[in-house]
View: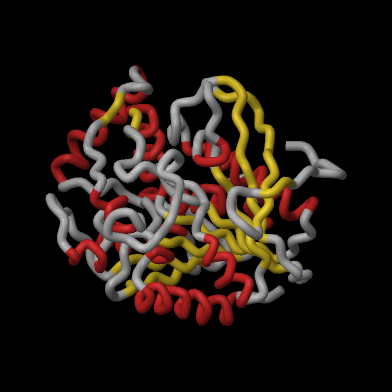
Length: 321
């Protein structure tokens, strides 16, 4: 991405937000773009946060902007290529063939914030797959030195599979992904979508075209990309910025609906997160949120406020802008 002196920002689908498109080098499926969203604000400080969403997701959590603005941070988010605002007609939704594709998107967004938006202290906030991609970017991305701190909300550091499947099935699917990258891999459930969307058992409004209740089919090429990125984490990263990793206190693997799904991570295994988070770098703090869910920012009022309080306390220790 090249620096633009007079970048166009247009009204976003969310009230009080604007967006701009980042045109990136062509990928394996042709032209690709990412979309950066910013909160229209009166804040003038150099401190800011960049939010990176997960798989089958896009930025819609406007209350995150409310929270971070109370911390004196200007709010930005990036919709990664083939997701949400950045999904184009010629693309298969929510897929990639290397984590480097997402790292490139994050790097481009960071470059925009630093060169064009006057950001001098930047917090990278990644959720789930965005947490995995954000960790890799903060480790070896071209713009990693512009990242002052990293907050990961339930990062996707390992597949949520039984041990024998991780040992046998996951490597096999990864190998298949190198040969048949567009092969659909079954296994997604609508239960998580049911637990968060206001039309079902949740409290949140989001676009079901961009974020269906059962998500989008995972492609074998995406499985391979995530598998290789997770092996990179397991080998150990060296993020030099301070890192906070928060996750729910417990996980469930439900077969049917119950209200217990509103008080646990039903997407990832929190034990995997706790085990692998210390591998991210030399300055990592890890904590669990009682009654939290997969996206802690979408949990019930009590656990959501607990998570925000943990972030606030951590920011008070690490922020130096």
